[in-house]
Length: 248
Ligand SMILES: [Zn+2]
Image 1 (cartoon, rainbow, N blue to C red):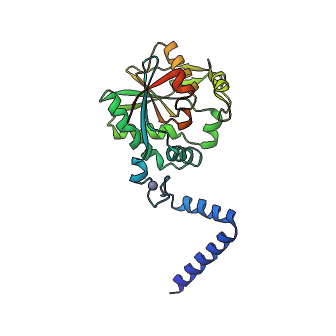
Image 2 (image 1 turned 135 degrees about the horizontal axis):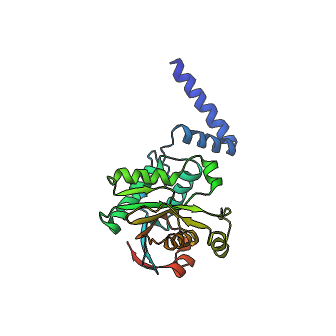
């Protein structure tokens, strides 16, 4: 009884102070997420990422002008973009599992049972340092397990010869200049390659990765991305690199 009273007092005090101070409420919410982060990124229900929100994602596929298909489970999805931001920047690592679950059926639909070496876009040194972990490596390790090894991580194939600067604030032309000619490919595995990036925005980084791999004598059989944001549909990436092939 004493414990209950103590708990309800604690809750009451917390609620009152949260109601009084919006900042405190935000901090409380962030604290709750740390303690019990299993809240849906779409609707905040108590579920890691609820079925309703997952099935609401808009799927899309493109093929590049060079004939390399681009597969993504989530074009035009604010929920997906929010999830990716939390997963990368707020270290919401549980989402790696969900993201692998979303990507795997898209990959199997496109590439059937072909074994593929997954090549990642190299992280910038700064982001590696600040995050302390590599979210995309997490996803590929989960893909490898879920596919019984059909998709394998090919490590350190691509590297930055010259580190690009942070490009979130750059427009498409500056993004292109920021990365062009700066990547190198090495340690090429035998077998077919799949290029994987988290979010394809302008397409500049993907183009540079394709260039580096092609210069090294390998053309990937496909590109995969966790998301292509809505504001890029019909803009530079699609116009200059790819055209819509199929929308589901
Ligand atoms: Zn939901």
